[in-house]
Image (cartoon, rainbow, N blue to C red; front, side, top):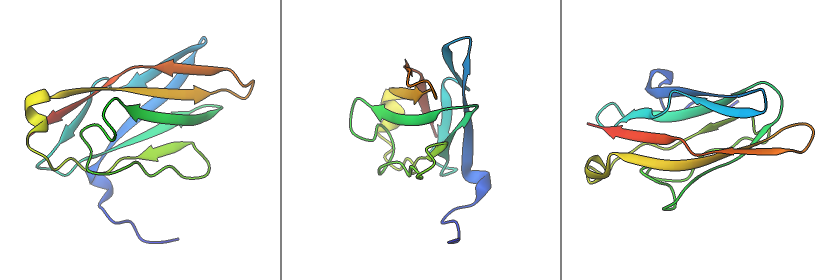
Length: 115
């Protein structure tokens, strides 16, 4: 296994779960600090796979694309480096989970950029 390119303390864990057929994301919004070089680390608690995490504008506030492993059980973002994102502050994104039955469930939570 290759070494991590960052410290685990820099990750902001984001739990994705399905309860009663409804997709939930916690926390919402996801707090991301530019100064602390936070990365969002979305993970799926339960059955299914994370099909996508998409922002309206390419990578949203993040510098680059997301790291999506083959298991599709978790997704790791890049860091936020552009201070202009502090003006917009909140970025809406869509997460889509596919259950073992094939049913897809979308949700539109937010990422909040902080200093």
